[in-house]
Image 1: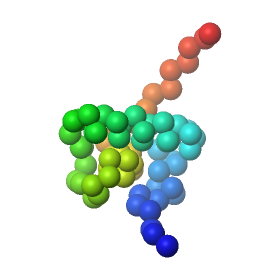
Image 2 (image 1 turned 90 degrees about the horizontal axis):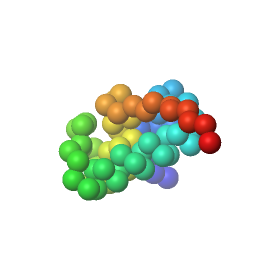
Image 3 (image 1 turned 180 degrees about the vertical axis):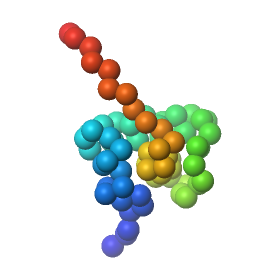
Image 4 (image 1 turned 30 degrees about the vertical axis):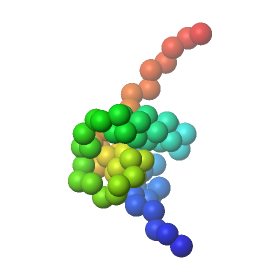
Length: 69
């Protein structure tokens, strides 16, 4: 069994829900894939893992913007 780093226990306190975490990591991974520099020490060659590391290290955050329809 593979151990996932960072763990969900480290990541979930950084966001308001696991769905927000998924969207935040996916968006950041796409930015890294497009050439944005990684803000943390590279732990992996996978962009999603590096994005999650950035979330765990508080290098990226999110702001909930409420918009009415």
